[in-house]
Image 1 (cartoon, rainbow, N blue to C red):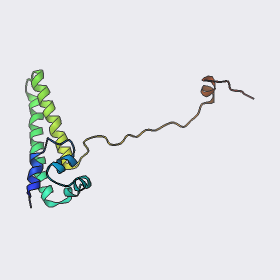
Image 2: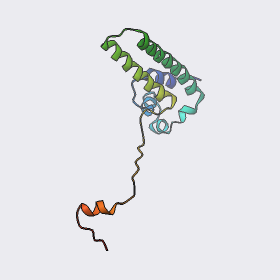
Image 3: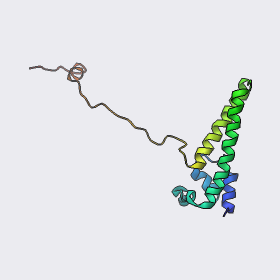
Length: 126
């Protein structure tokens, strides 16, 4: 069943930066929006499937236009910008990642005694 909140979700697409902001703007509580439980409801899935399909069609139209038209820089920039925004909205609404949330660093734990000794002191060799 599609509710008034679902309709407000659709109206706020593109205005919110995160799914939580989108849900809160539609009238959901902060804790419910943060938990993301709505994504599992049939009404939400139905509304979002329709919206995502429309966004994907529009994105494809932009991609096709970029391939065949002789575009000046301003039109090209506008189309790329629109495609970027549509792609991010698709990711946001379908549950995909919209930003990198983790960074993995690795360090080599090997130790070179000759390098360490030349940086600030002497190394004694026996």
